[in-house]
Amino acid sequence: MNFPERLKELRQGKNLSQIALAKDLGVSSRNYQRYEYGEIEAPISVGVALIFSTCRLIIWSAGVTTRRDIERWWIYVIKAINFG
Image 1 (cartoon, rainbow, N blue to C red):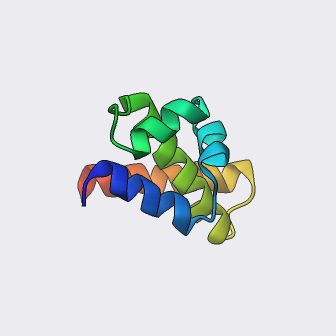
Image 2: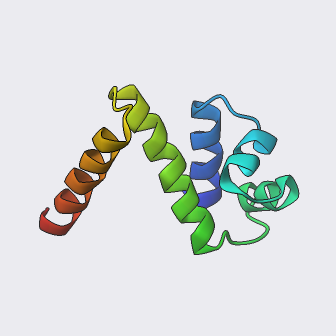
């Protein structure tokens, strides 16, 4: 599965329209559509925004709601990435 297909699958899995996800990622709806159709490659900033958007959903699902809890969660994630 290539990036455009994964992007579409992720969006549909979150029950979002292209317009809603584009707004969440901070890009125009037309550019988002072009990423999903594979017409242009998404810049790294869009990938980072997509990761952050997805992590927000995971954080919320885990019941992490306060700023302190979020900071602790990110420290845990960074340590997990760095030390595998």
